Image 1: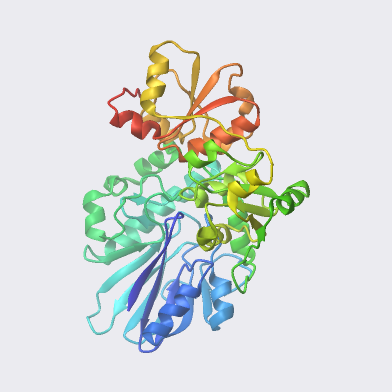
Image 2: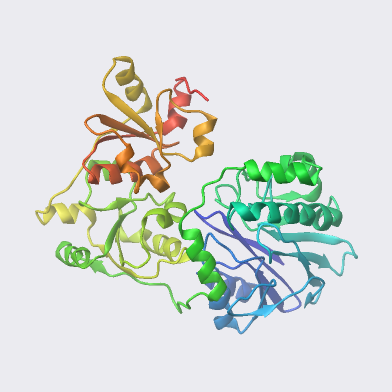
Length: 453
């Protein structure tokens, strides 16, 4: 039995392998009940939990799952505050299935991969769990320890890929820890399945055959590093707090919500950009649920309780799961009855306009005084932008609002309008006259409007 478990939003992939009554989980997520459900369905007992590396984009569920199952947690050679050290060549015996540890440093110094063998099929490897060393269409980052460490880590990554993973054979299936959309890689493919042979044929990074050229490529790579990565790394190194169960935020009346915010709680509105623009609670931050796991850590402080504003209580479970996966455990409540209840209580709402790309183009062609602010990543910005637009990545905007011109309408652009709503809301709170461009540069391009590089 081999199953892949995907954590929506984070593009995090974990796996469960089992046979002959035993199972191992590789890189579990923090809300880990799903692994127990699978174990029950398959008649397995989880005996081992394997970490490929000290993850930086989410809180791992190793201690949580270990507390529930008594399973042994294994990790690479780093001073973790929990678990046991695994070394290259060590084997996890699951009966018919065997997992063999393979040291693959580079993304992090302690990175481990785990090679899967099927005793009933022969001595050749069936697959390999590569963590953040090798993705579909991409390889791992080497910049997370600072620029000065790239020269040390990039050669290690090259050697791990070419000296350890590729020799496993072209038929070997790769099982990476992330898919498309993860900040742990630059251009991870939308396809989540691959083999060593397919990567040799299609992965551009693997076509670089000289170590010095690979290092140069890594030195020139520009990727955003979220602020919260450092916190996730520290939490995962020391050991994740055990939740026991997911938080169950209570419904709060408008007056109760106000008392929480006066005491320092932050208001998180996860509704769609058009809903937020049409009317929102003053001071609330809009991070639409589609981008919540990747952008909450850029703007939400960890030492403040979180209050939720949603379209209804039916989405609470999904939102809570997203937040605890990135370390937000203090979820104090949600606005019962939503924004409508707030308005019915006679409390004020704020709003700003949303426009389509064609409307923005018409305004620009008429010569209206509109300043276009592009809040996408630098890589997206370099791939094509509206001529004359300003670039400030949304993750940095909170500390750089003074760079945005006042006294003009500011049309905020991202690729779709989701991150644009986050940026427009922050600017609106700072007194800017904003417009959020729904559809973003994607809609702009589909309308046949020009982008420059």
